[in-house]
Length: 107
Image (cartoon, rainbow, N blue to C red):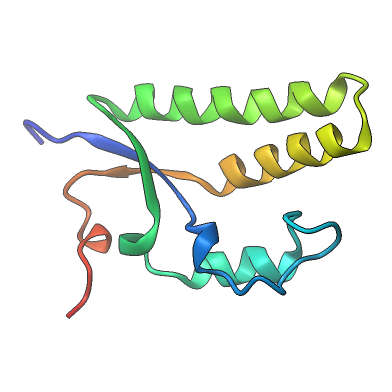
């Protein structure tokens, strides 16, 4: 479609109850991931806009790679958790067409 753009969107962590953790505060758990997946895309955070799906996916993959790199480099346990959380978050993120009806809040 002419003029169609793409958004890199990620799940809205701030919408989760504070007691839904699988380990150290802030770390991901299967329960948190499932709760995030159930939230409508209209409530997800939009991080960046792109002209093409390819450019959007390249940015998403770059962010995933950063998480993998953080995990592969010896760090202290806190940094390892940040790398794992970065990898998990951007693995859940999606590239969505700007005209996708799921981005429109339901009335």
